[in-house]
Length: 310
Image 1: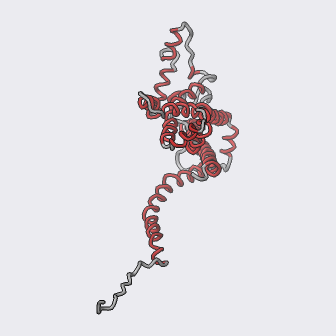
Image 2: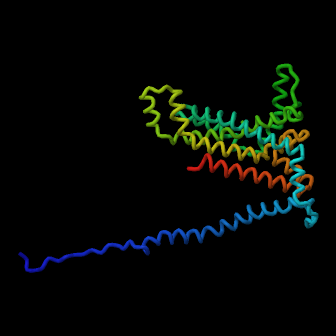
Image 3: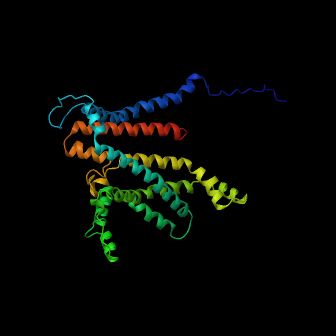
């Protein structure tokens, strides 16, 4: 037996009291104080102030020169809602939204279900379908303006090959919007297709395999397993499609500039044609405020009801 007494070693542990718990929050607060002011400054300069100026200018009958002095209150908004051209533009935006949701997204989802599988040439086909989205909107509009040309375009050559008279799609009030809708579907379906492919490839394959082991058919697996797992991506695609349809402008201007007779105007092209080209800045500002309210209302409502947990 040793003559020394047994030493009792007491190891101190870090104190986890209120002071220790406050350190992470202090770090987050410091980070917020460093990074938040520049972001708020940029947001205020480039978003809040232009919106405020547009709302202010919408109360004037102003051509953009000098200082606005002729205050007319809410008359510009009344003029906008009484305008036949704005009604046509609003209807065209609704038509673009309907085509995007009922044709573009189902087409993108169908191709994604096919191209998500691994087979020879799948990557090449994905790139081929995605290329239209990479192409700039103005370039796309110029290309299709040549394709639709009833005298020298590709469409005219095809009709003449069959002995038929080529239509002038962009020059007719009956077909100009149809021509734009075709370009919209062609241009943007590849973007949604890639979103769906990414979601499919990130899906747990064990769920699909378990459903097949249980005897589910291919259609049942698609309906009860794959599509429900794609709901978050579908909701995101719907949001992008609607907001993009409301803001469509770059494709319209090279193709028709909103004509003929305002038949292919969207709300943004109508704003440009009246607020910028005709220098009716107060009238155009009222259109911009209305469009802003529509977009914000949709975004907030959609986020609240359909993307609450995302």
